[in-house]
Structures are given as structure tokens and as C-alpha cells.
Length: 352
Image 1 (tube, helix red, strand yellow):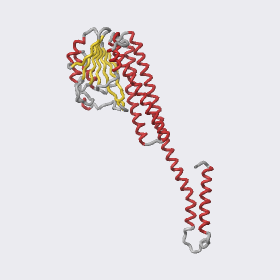
Image 2 (cartoon, helix red, strand yellow):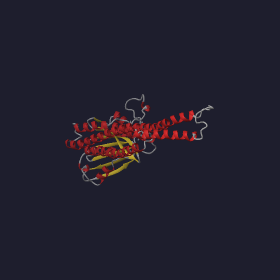
Image 3 (cartoon, helix red, strand yellow):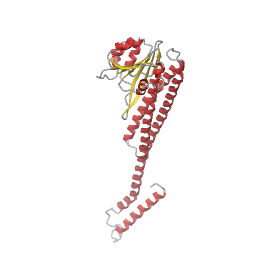
Image 4 (cartoon, one colour):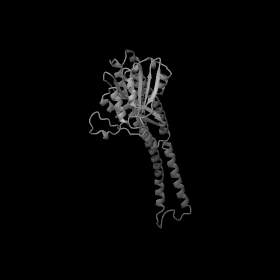
């Protein structure tokens, strides 16, 4: 899983408001798409210049401007200046290790949160920044993948309430899609935890421990992404901003409940993983104890046998039974009797 915290060394010493991206710079072009809609009309297009977004600033219809890629800071800067976004917020947009937060600046509301999705068996995390205005929502993403396809389909096909509601509902729908995808992540992690638990019981290996540690780090990252999100949703729910209508409280409360469920699931999985680490250490210790017990029993059996053969291995000329024709077999008989007696004793004591 990608790290939630990235290096900020390139930003050291620069003035506040300087747009310096800290994510890995990619070669592909930034993609800007516009979806403009109301109950009766719908327009979707990809624009080549930020200037094409300017007419949508004052339109009465609802507009969703999505920016895929923030490594070209001049696009973020120009779009932010067009819609009156403060430079410090533009700096937060390109600084992709922000903690989820919400800021109400009167004419618009800024929300930043983390979007998680699956890429094969890996969990990818990226920052999503939302600017909520009176009749527009601007979303900034690090990469071109997202979890918003269902919302686009609802807008295109005029399903649900999206085209009947305002920009606040669109922002809620985007946040809700991100939060709902957390459940898919938790289901996948739950499956991995169950698989590791079975391995711990049957045959714990060093690779199992490495996988366990990796899952623990993943849970720490998830907690960092979800824990402050509760405050973000709660702040939107209690906000007195005119940009969020009174009827939105019920929807935001539903998203808040989802974040609480996810947080409870994360805490439960963290407790399970901590317990599994103890199980692993106990299993390894028990296996070592079993090996040492077997070796100790073998050594204990051979101690008297070694004594016997040591005595009869002395090179004295006048030793009892040395000239006896049955001396060799007598010693073997004593050795076998001693060994069997000790095995029976160990079995009776349930040491075997």
C-alpha cells in the first residue's frame, strides 16, 4: 500500500502559498473534465484549457469540474485564481499528504480527504480535494483513477436526486462514494486477516509474520485516513454555511454513521492483528518447546546408556563379565531394558 506521508523536503524554506507538488511527477497531461447539468439538460466534455472553465463560474446550472493530476501546478493555480481560491488552499491541494479536513471560507467550502481503491491486491491511497461553491464543485485528484463512475452514470442517465439537487448534494455524493469504497477495502483486508489466521494455526512461517506486519501498517494508514474524516463530516453537518442547505443534514448524518462503522471495523481488525502477533510468537515458542522436549527426552534416555557403555568400554584387564561368553548380550539386554523403562515412564507422565 502506498505511504500516506510523503517527503516534504522540496517545500523546505519556500514562502507560504508557493505551489510545490510533493507527489511523484508524471509525464502524462493533466485531464480536466466538465459536467454541467440541471433537471432538463446535461453536458459533459473534456477541455484543453482552463479558460474554458471560466463561463461556468456564474452559470445557474450545476457544474462539476474534475481535474485528474495535480503535477502541473500552473493548471491548479489558474483554475484556483479563476474561482477565487485562496493560495494557501491551492498549496494544500498540491501538497498531497494533507490530513482530512474541512474549511469554510464563506464563498466556498474546502474539503480534503483520502480516496482508497484496489489495484490488484494492493491498496492505493490518494488525496482528493473538493471545492464546494454555490453552483459548482471542483475536485482535484492525484491520479486518473477514482470511484466516481457511479455518480457520473447517475448524472448522465438522470437517475436519483443528483440532477434535481444542488452543488451541496453533489459534494455529498462524491464524499459518500469515497466512504462507501472503504467498506470494499475492509472486506478485502478481512479476507487477508482470516487467511493469515489459518496459517498461524496450521504452520506459522516468517513470511506470515511479514504479511502480518504489512497489514498492521495498512491498518495504521486506514486509521489516519478515516479518523479525522469523522470530524470533517460532523463539521459539514453542523455547518451554518448557506452553501449547505438544511435538508442535507440527514444525508451527511448517514455518511457520518458509515465512517463510525468503518472506524469500529478498523479498530476491531487492529485488535485481531495484535492478538495474531501474540499467537504467532506463542506458536513459534511452542514449536521450539516441542523440539527441545524431544531432544531432551532423547538425551535423557542416552545418559544412562552412555554410562553403561562407558563403564564397559574401560580397558582394565580384570573386569567382571569381560571373559564371559554372555557379557556382550547381557549389556545389550540391560541397555534395552533401561531404554524401554524410561520410555514407558515418560509416556506414563505424558511427556511423549
